[in-house]
Image (tube, rainbow, N blue to C red; front, side):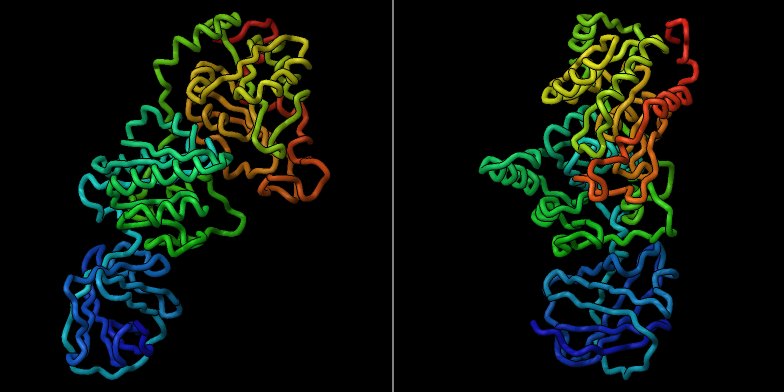
Amino acid sequence: MRLGRLVTTQQAGRDLTLRKPIRRQTVNLVPTKEPCQAQFAIQWPAASIPRLRKPWNACFSPKTLRCRCFDSCWPSASGDSNLSLNPLVSPSLLLKVKGIRQSAHSETSCVTVSSMHRTQIIPQLPREAKVLFIRLRSLGDTILSTPLFAALKNHRPDLRLSVLVEEPNQEVLFGNPDIESVFLLPPTTAQGFSVITARATELAKIRAKGFHCCINLHGGTTGAWFTWLSRARYRVGLSSFRNSFCYNVRIDLPSRQAGTKQHTVEYQIEWLRALGLPSGEIPSLRIFPDPALEPKIKDRLEQYGVQRDTGYCVIQPTSKFHTKEWTPSGFAEIAEYLETEAGYRVILTGGTGEKQKLEQVAAKCRTRPVILATSSISELVWVIKEAKLFVGNDSGPTHLAAALNVPTIVLFGSSDSKVWYPWKVAHQLVQNPFHCNPCPGYRCLVYTEPLCILSISPQQVKQAIERLLPAHKNRSGNHPN
């Protein structure tokens, strides 16, 4: 249906410009004051009342009113915000708040439109509503989303939360009491017709579940399409996301002062607060080791002479990005330092496809660290859980260590340490300043090699260890209990 001309009306000290999908006539918008909710009576000229077979459902668009009560709903006179009214049957009405203007009123009949702040949907969700989070990409991203699930469940224990993740990241959600179900996608590296089949299968499961709300924490195309096709009543994403048509709730987060940055956990919590979550303390990361794997890992460590009461440190020298990966010789020197100076056994960890990198580090050591290439994330969890210290690059296992409350040393290269540092755990950051940092990290665009990570010296890492664990500097070779 073609949109009509713009008409204006002045009500409650504010002027509203309405583009209406009906004939050309004035439409009056009359707000009434109610706590935390605004109601509007749209007054149509009597001769042109639209045919409505169902009540209208109208909600604020994300770029509009961000308040929690009607008094602060209206933008300032200098503001410019959009408000979208989405009827269940008819095309949407688009309103635009402008400066105050005069307009003629005509004889009217009323059609009532109940409206809430579009982004304040958490208080409006029915009891035991089903909520789907889409958290694609890396292991670290999945771990750093667990405080969101905990915060939402603390506020609304009745909600039934599910998560869509990529394999094998679902392992870090094992046993999480905040999550009812997990949907799996093949990793982004997978290709072929089987990927399409797997995605179609998971989409069918999601649609059958009947979610009330779908929140896409990742702005990529795959997440956008799954959000759009989820059949959820509320499909949530940032207003800056691509494929904006996939979302009917778009969040505009408050702008921050220049030079200030938020940790990614704090940033994601702002999403929920924009959706109606009250302010409060942000939970820690949450990981629940699989108890069935404990005997297996214990036996495997004992084969290498590492007993449970033996103090050991874990070094994870690998990363998916070479701009985040420190040198094998550097890690070898740190392994020697921990064994000879602090009296700890050292375990080099990595995936089954990273064993060669672990052997490169071990070959440069005068001592002989344990090489343990785990076959799953769940096994790695148990190895890190009993460690006295974790040393690694900015990667998923580093956030695993933080979730397990293991003191952590992180070596940062291309990524932003103010955004990705270990959350709520004792830690030390090692990073050298470069004018080009941070960057996406796929390759170095300034130098022939990523100097941001390669410029880190072993001495810097040793000093970080001493700052974090001063008691571990035990010259007698006995580690502290």
